[in-house]
Length: 417
Ligand code: RNT
Ligand code: ZN
Image (cartoon, rainbow, N blue to C red; front, side, top):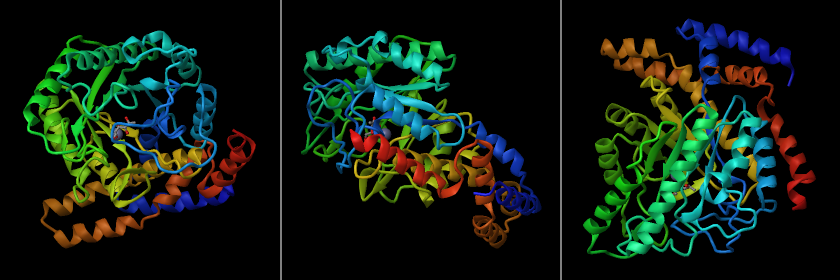
C-alpha cells in the first residue's frame, strides 16, 4: 500500500480523534508496549514433541487436517517466526511442556528438566522473544479423567511432580530473560457422568495445588485456569470458575480467563474488574468459542472488543497478560496466528482510542443519551487509519497485504511437509 496514502489517512484520523479529546500518538505508543503471548500450539495442532503417538486428550479437540503442520522443533520455530513477522510489535511465546527438546528420548512428564528447554531459552533470547510456560496434563497414558485430583496417590503424585518441575522450568526461563515467565496451570479433571464425589476431588485438587505452590519463586508467576466442561467430561469439572476464583483469591494467585470457558452469554470482559480488585493480575486466553469451547481463530468481534476496552477502562494494561489460545487445524496455520493476533491488536487499538474522558463526563452528568451516542459514534471513528499507521511504523504489511505472503510461504515451505 502507498505510504503516502497511509500517512494522509492518519493525519486526518489524528485530527478527527483530537476533536473528541483523544491523542492518537499516545494510543500508538501504548499499543507498542503491549506484548501478546503467542501460543506455540496453533502451529502443530497441540501435538508437541513427545512422539508418543497418542491422540489429543483431556477434553480438548482440534478439527481439520489442513496440510503442513509443524512436525518438529525446527519447523515450529520457523513457522512462529514467519507468523511473528506479520504481527506488529514485540511478542512473547507461550510453550507447553510437551514442546521440550527431548532428543529422541522418552522423557516422562515427571522427569522433565530445564535442560529440555535450554534450546528454547537460547532461541528465544536470540529472537528477542520472552517465554511463558504451561504444564501439560493431557494426552498422556496417566491423564485419564483425573490428574491432580486423582484419589490414586501414584497418579496424583506423578502430576504434582510434573507441575513442580514445570514451575522450576518457568523460573529458569524468567530468570534468564529478566522478566517473569507466566506459567499457566490448566488441568482437564472432571467427570463424564454424574459424580457423588464433587467435594473429594476438589479437596484433592486444592491439596495438590498447595503442595505444588509450596516453593516460592521470584522469576515466574502462577496462573490457574478454569473451564465449564471438556468433551467427554460434561457432567462435572473439578477446576470450575468458582473453585479457582476462591483458590486464587485466598492464595494470591492469578486467574486465567479463557474466553471459551464460560457459558455462551456470559461476558468475560465483565469479570476483569472484579478479579483485579482481589487478585494481583489477570491472565487472558483470547479465543473464539463457536457454540462450545471450539477454539476458533480469534476475530475482531464484540467479545474481543469488549475485553480489550475493559482492560483499558480498568487502566490495567500492566496487570493483564494477554495470551492467545486457539487451534484451528482446518486452515493455513501461520495465517491463523496472524489473523488472531492482529485481530486482538485491532481491538486493543480501538480500546486505546476510545474517547473515555468524554464518555465518563457524560456518565457523571447522568447524560445517558449522550453516552450512548458517543459510544456508537466512536465505533465509526477512523481507528483503522491509526492501525495502518501502527503496521507501517512497525514495518509489517498493512491491511490484506500479508495474505499473498502467507500463501507464498505455504507454497514454498509448509505444503512440502
Ligand atoms: C483448554 C484450555 C487450555 C488449553 C491449552 C492448550 O480448554 O483452554 O488453556 O487450550 O493449554
Ligand atoms: Zn485456555
